[in-house]
Length: 413
Image (cartoon, rainbow, N blue to C red; front, side, top):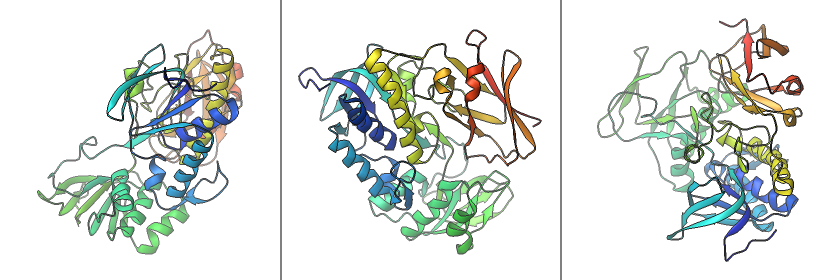
């Protein structure tokens, strides 16, 4: 279907111009032949990869290894070539149950009518203030996202000596970003008993530079009234630095979902969706890191591709999920994606995260109404801040009349 430019009607309005949003809008045009509007509140498309200038992007969706900026440009060019209507610098203020989208951009506020809305609003890191880290309020405290924009897009030097808070993948890549900006990383600090990245990344970014990783520790105080001068850890150790980088601890950008009245998962703080991105509200989808905080960009793109199946069912026949059941988890599990299940999910893989390291032996069980409907043994450590997967053939055993499904790791205290 084509766009009626006079009335502002689109088959699909995608909110968010990162890898998930760009991929979704492109394949809506390419595979479904439907009109697509892609809105992005920033002045550019590509999301986080646009300001992440290292290799590792595009492997699983485009089957090429690219830098972040090149990956972002490639996805944007694909969207343009397919005829997606791209509007940067445009903010979605709200949307109605009638799928009317309220937009602000180009010095004006206006509405468009959609047949489907896709929330691809992404994720952000919790700031120092959200983490309630005490101390002075001097300059020099950033999240990884702010650091990347300052260094790679604006060419600004943030400092000379940095402490990185966190020890997951993004924490180690922050070392490279700091080095690019002429800032030495003097330590990583994590509350967990060990880091959460892969051994090659640990060596590449930290070990070969002799950067210590302080485990089972946290920042107790940040010092410096005008500019950061150092930090004191809970262990009592003092580190002299002029920059502190807070990494990870992801939160979905779910304001639009909340404004629209979507059900929100307690663990992930993301909208409830099935594996095709369908919420409980017909015509409303959510994809990418807006629903699984936070996975790699190419996995977000693959998530978007799967959602196009659901969009096709909706646009072509008005089909929505039937007999959907919510999924709940027991600690130390934090959240799952998808958080709603039906028979349509039997060919998917579930993503799960935990709040702490879980060592084998262990058994993961799926129960409903007190009855175990599936279980499996896991012989590998489950690492916090990294997702693990479960097959979902067990959804064929789910009875939609018996209420929610619970997933637990048995034998863990």
